[in-house]
Amino acid sequence: MNRRTLYSLIFILILLGAGMYIDLPGAREIKFLGIDKQISTHRGLDLQGGIAILLKASPPAGRTTITSDDMDAVQTIVTQRVNAFGVSEPQIQQQGSDHLLVELPGIQDPDLAEKTIGSTGLLEWIDLSGTPNAKVGDPVTDQPVVVSGKDLTNASVGFSQPGTSGGGTGPEIDFQFNSDGAKAFGDFTGTHVGQPLGIALDKTLIEVATIQSKITDSGRITGKFSIDEARSIVIQLKYGSLPVPLSIEATQSVGPTLGQDSVTRSFVAGEIGLGIVVAFMVLYYRLPGTIAAVALGSYGVWTYAVFRMWPVVLTLAGIAGFILSIGMAVDANVLIFERMKEELRSGKTLGAALEAGFSRALPSIRDSNMCTVIICIVLYYFGSNFGASIIQGFAITLLTGVVVSFLTAYFCSRVFLRTLIAFIPHRLHAMHGSRLRWLFGLEAKPLERPAFGQRTAEARA
Image (cartoon, rainbow, N blue to C red; front, side, top):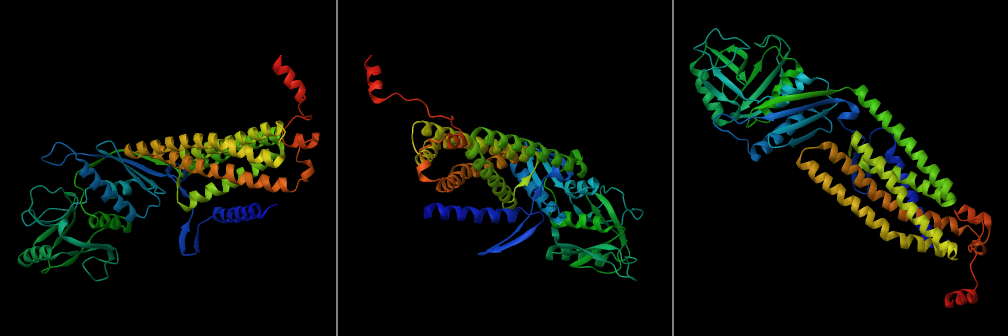
């Protein structure tokens, strides 16, 4: 074995060990050579369960159309709300000109999710001096607005203390105004002490209180909030009002049991398919087929490691793309081994047939993989434009699998076969022995070839 092959083999084994470490179950942190990264398996909505919400935007008052700028702003604000909501790996994508699809893996409370994401988030302090009998839950009609949420600089969840007007240690919403809001609010509360003041969210009163003293740049909203409700309101206030009204057109809940069942079935399908492929390669190509099976195992380790490191959000469609790429990895080995068999039949030694087989199969493997890569790029582009996350997931995993499969089939299989051939005595490289020929998938006896003089006579005839 020459040094180049030895160093290549060591490099592959190091990469294989690193990939197996990354693939170990559970989340972990990698710190190496300046790399500081958290790695874990990210599962999509259809694998771990959760909620998918389809939102429809409507033109605001005085307008008849929804612009692309409106939808971009809506997507940005909804993304901020979802991130603050603490959802792991959400998918938020525009669909068409006026729809937004929000996928929230791991969330099981659809009502709270809908309220947090879909409500406009318009906060207003209302002058109720003209309607002293107003109560929580009443709609706001024509009452004057003192200050609106656009003057907020911050909002957070706090807890009222015993003995305060909050009435205990329940959750409250603390807020701060900018200079304009503080002036307007201070002027109003200073001249309306003893009169009712309402706080409305999306034109519905959420609190009615009596002004006790002048309030300027900060205050708090108390009421019968749960911690989750208070947090939901804070998220809406903190990340601004939506520029256009949103309505919930459809909500789909996926239970974790269904997701786990899908994962189990996918793995069973993958194991069966992989087993059949490996059996075919070993039975038909024998020793090279066994080498291909080892390279295929390396391919699986590295591809899954890429998914965890990137990270790629795995969905059922993504797993389908991964399983499909396994077939493409084997396809490359089939082309290489068939070329090797042709070279061996022509009388070349093992080493020469190996190098010729890989070199002459390269154009076919490269071109077929490049066509698949182009298709994956097109699928991802159209999936991005039309909000089809299923198509995108399939395209990403298939693209990753194709690239890794090309590297493993062409480089790893080559190094493994070079290593194997290095341990076969050189005098046997001419493939005269029937047992050795059988191990490489050839006929037990060499093909009969006419002598040179006989070929010349036949050619003249």
